[in-house]
Image (cartoon, rainbow, N blue to C red; front, side, top):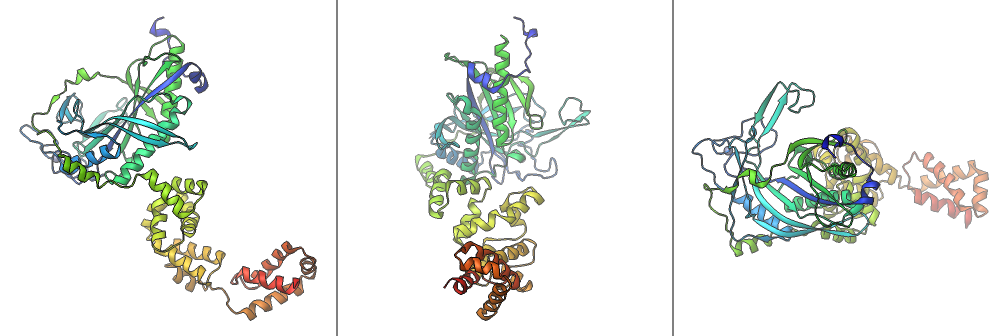
Length: 510
Ligand SMILES: [Zn+2]
């Protein structure tokens, strides 16, 4: 059958794919390291600077310029390798990966080829159903980032339809670590979920290592998804496609599923998969053809002659091993048990990215339940709807700190505020009216401590609602709720509802 008869952009359903094929994935994650300077020169790395202001002869590849390896970047690479349970090379070199592209000023990328700094590791990934999938890591190697092309004049920002292109070399030479998995088999219908969970776990780990800001939306962490299908019962790997720069966790999952459905359609039509790179389109949820993928031979790799080999001593590697943080998954389990959160509560906390904020609030003196309650209620709603931000950055921007939560909780336990008053105070804090005490003072919020006033209100309400009072006398204790509501209204909300309840029941049932 000729290729012309095969629709290479058709898809079949996910169930149809799974009935006939096993997916095999390979995930390549590029992480920009958070070093102050670039991989081989002293240029600054800050994100968002004016184009071409963070460049020098080395990262522009000018003749005669000589690179020097960034020691901090090598340390970060080794720490990442150790955290991924990898072997660390005792001796390795950089290599030149030769290709011509406008965003690469040297016409080669300084990378590592057959001598990566870290190799043969694994990362255990917790899945939604509580099971664990072990992702085998083939290698983690050091390289440098390329510049950025900006295509102007078209509607899509892509080169097709553009009138001209601009290049910003600020990013050229920023240290990158590329982490490559072995082919992941046996994932079946959970392929997409496993891919997403792996990238999420890796992101948490890199964050805990404090080696990168891992912002997928800014491109400091990017994932390429390699995917192929094997007909069920066969063991030879099929031809793979590589979907580039998938920049959110959700997209990683969607891209895997989409390519599975597209490969399935081609293979069912009797066609064959073209080995190529694909572009992921976040808006439409599809991939489109990129360029035909080069084999390693086409890059004419050879050892970089301008750099000395990297040969970390065993002592220095052991010292770096001592700097590794508690693995995030273990930390989560420890904190969940320390805090007494249910699985559901902990999942909500994790999804909202609140773990560190709750941690520092508990450290500052709040109860875990209180920290969770105040950081996940109103402020989460506001962060999401007003700023589209996570709670931590929203709070930081407005100067709202763990100390505010501790103070608010203190006002409640001291008996100055009841729960609904505390909510009003918290809203005042979020509105920028000051500390909880200042807001409570300014708004005149204070529980009436005078039992005489409360008792008078209780008597008034009982007298005004004889029918309800009789129900309570007859043993319908839940009817007291209506009376408590009336008393709170009488007291303008500034009474302790628990105390009002006690008083009402004492008068009517004893
Ligand atoms: Zn430079």
